[in-house]
Image 1: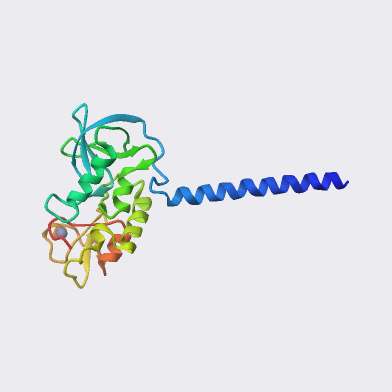
Image 2: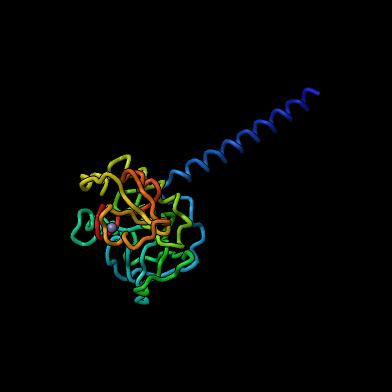
Length: 219
Ligand SMILES: [Zn+2]
């Protein structure tokens, strides 16, 4: 009888330990730089040249644009850091690519998530404040993971989030069909119908939703 209850206790302890391990693994995976997703990276390529912080050319001379993010343009602050970080990570190496629904942009660049070893490169650029979340319909599957990483960079005021914000507006506008936000007088938003027009109070509200600033009016 006593032996039987000891055995039960042992089984209980082992089960508890197994559960604890699972919880810890789940927690640490969620906070690692490699991110939770995407998990399948079927296409392998070698990186021949890094163009800037969010694009590179493969050995087969195909240009790849990192999906879901946007790094600063050439003469903007942190453009150099974003590019050299990408070079350090992937130049001359084999990387794995995965697509979302839209596979190419209008310049025939492949739109991909990029992984090397256990690092989800797109997310890492955002997490370290070297890119903003930049979503293109209909490729929005990893919006929440990318916004989560961006929120951490914003909280810590690192990279582009350490810069003083542009002059504020009383409110901002977006089209419910797109992931950009604008100053109220921006020409790009005027074509939007009243039905699809959405008003936002602050820039923070826009970034929380995964919207990125318009490249014309730079809100
Ligand atoms: Zn605009």
